[in-house]
Image (cartoon, rainbow, N blue to C red; front, side):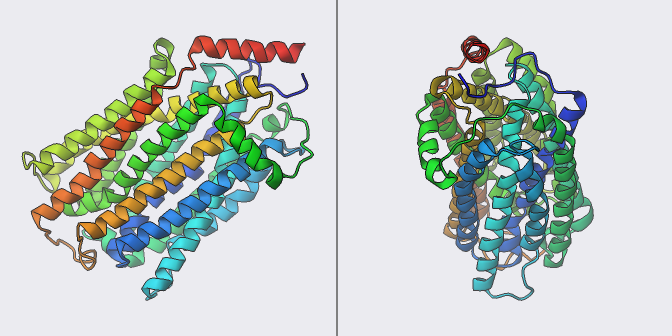
Amino acid sequence: MTEATPPEPQLKPPFGVKLSYGLGAVADSAWTAASGFVFFYYTAVLGLPGSLVGAAVFIGLVADAGVDPFFGSWSDNIRSRLGRRVPLMLVAAPLIAISVGLLFSPPPGASQPVLFAWLAVTSVAVRSFVSMFHVPYVALGAELSGDYHERNAVVAWRTIFAVLAAVVVTGLAYSLFFQGEGGLQKPERYPGFGWSAGALMLVCSLVCGVGVLRFAAGLKSVPAVPIHLLRRLPGEVVEIFRNRSFRTLFLSAAVCYAAVGVNGAFNSHAYVFVWRLQPEMIRDVTFAFLGGMFAGVPLTPLIGRRLEKRTTVLIGMALVVLAWLLLGVPRITQTFMPAGQAAEAPIAVLVALAGVGAGICAIAYYSMMADAADEHHHLFGRPREGLYFAGLGFAFKGATGVGVLISGFALDLIRFPKDVGRQVGAVLPEPLLQRVVFSWTLVPAILVLVGMAILLGYDISRRRHAEIAAALNGAHSS
C-alpha cells in the first residue's frame, strides 16, 4: 500500500518541538479570549442592536467554518520542502494580527450600517486567517505521534499554552486597558487592546512555525493528488462524513459549541449588570476559570489511563453543566443574590469548576478526533487529518456563530436597553436580570446535555485504536 501512515506508535517528538508546537495554541486561544469582548463592545458600548451584532458575528463564523475544509484539504495535500502544514501557518500569522487590530478599531462615530459592515467584514477576515493557521496546526499535532496516550501529552502541551495565552490576554484587558470602574464601558480603550492581542498572536505563531519546521518537514508525505482542490473537496467532505465516529464527534461538538457561544456572549452582561463586578473582579473570576482549565490538564492523562476517552469527556461536560446550573438556578430563584465583592468568591469557585471540565474536554476531545482520523485512514485508505480537524473547527465556528446569533436576538427579545452600556453603575429591573441569567446559564446547560447524549454513540476504545494502529503499520510494512 503506498498511502502514508500515521507516525509509528513509539515516535515521540523532542521536548523542543513540543514546546514550540504548544506556542501555536496562542493564536486561537488569544483570539478566543479577545473575541469574548466583541459582543459587549459592539452592543453595550457602541450601541449596535444585538440582532445586528449577532448577525454580523454569525456571518463571520459561518464564512470561516466554510473555509475550514478548504484549508484542511489544502494542508493535507501540500508538497513542499517545509512539509504539508507549516507553509500555511507562516503565511497566516501576520494576517491574523492585522485583522484582529482592525476588528477592535472601527471608524469613530460610524453609523449603524457602517458598524455592521465593519464588524461583518473584519469578523470574516479574522476567523478565516485564524483557520488558515489553526487547521493545519491541529492536524500537525495528530501527526507528531500515533501513540494512543502520547497524543494526550501533545494536546496537553497545546492546552497549557492555550490557558497561558488566555491568562495574558485577560490580564492585559482587565489590568491595563479596561481597569477601573466602568473600564469596559469606555470605547476609546478597545483599539489598543485589539492591536496588543494581535501582536501577541503574531509573535507566538511565528515562533511556533519556525520551531517545528525541521520536524514537520521530516514527516512522511502523501502521494500527489492530480485532481484540483476545488473539484476534489466536495467528495472528500462526503467521505469523512461516511465515518460514524466523525459524525458523532462533529454533532456533539456542534451542540456543545453552540452552548459555549451563548454563554460567552452573555458573560460580560452578566458580570457587569447582574453581579455588578468591577473589571478587576471580572479579571480574577476569569483567572479562576483559566486556573480550573490548567488543573484539568494533568487530570486528563490520569483519568485517561483508567477510563476511556469518551468517559473522560463526559465527566468534563458534566462538570461544566453542574457549574452553570449552580450559577443560574439560585440567582433566578432569588435564593442567592450577592453583588460586587460579595459575589466574586462564590462565582469564582463555580467558574473554576467549569474550567476544570473545559480543560478535560479540550484535551480528550481533540485526542478522540485524532483517533477517529486514524480509523478513517484504516477504513478508506487515505489520511484526512486536516479535514477531520477542519470538521471540528467547522463545528466550533458554525455552532458558536449560531450561539452568538441566538444571543443577539435574545438580547433584543428580552428588551435589554441599548443606551445602558455607557452608564456606569446603572441598575436594571430584577425580571430583566433574571432573563439575562437564564440565557447565560440554563440555555447553555441544556444544550450541553444534548451534546452528551450524542457523544454516547462514539465507540473507539483503546483496544479498537490498537487494532487500527496495528493494521495501518502492518499495511505500511508490507
